Length: 290
Image (cartoon, rainbow, N blue to C red; front, top):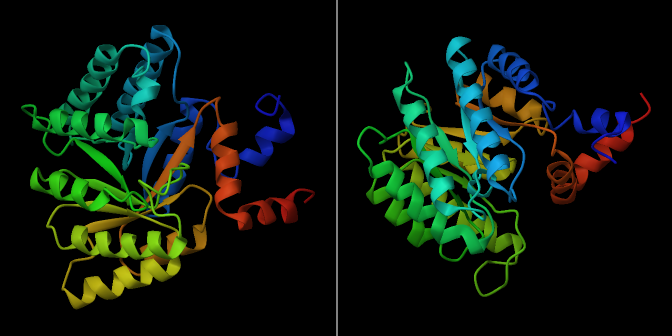
């Protein structure tokens, strides 16, 4: 009901580009004009049949075509369960392999980020990224996501760096048990900073995904201390969150990528954004009747 309602769509527009490919392209052009690059994500996960999986992959093919044709500064992010991992693992692998091959063959080459999902998918996702990256012509065209609240994160990073695979480092948004994930914010933050420094010194181009201004400041100080070039990595933030900080970082000479989601299944994503940062709910409440 929320997804179909006019007011629901208006509220979500702060964090979601829209429901169609053209909406995402329009927002991407606007963000690019402000000097920021983009990663486009078609919302949806855990599809239940082959037809949905194929349709999801076709939409990403269309997105890559449009990114190339319009010369946008953008790549794509996807979830394996959106490509049918729960339905037919071979199909999901084939679909994603096709997308990575397409991205690698573009001029200039593009990039596919394989998003991380809940812990039941962690090892399968990483194994597939390693396999994809190792295929001829795919090196540099596919990357992984590591969540700093996972206790295994450092070990996973070591293996990814050994293969020189690009990483997006985030804190993590799924509910996990104490056995496998840090529960305290202070522990998650401390692990993020420790892993962040490893990535920044690795010589591989990574993305630091956080809206935490204190952590961002630590990254900036560390980069200057270690003489790490501002174009050796990028900060990443969600569309609609801390736009002031996003643009300030660009003005200061840092690279900034905005994660732009779109699609008809925006409601779960929208609610997660409100749940993870109460200030987002307050922002909506203040502006609801304007």
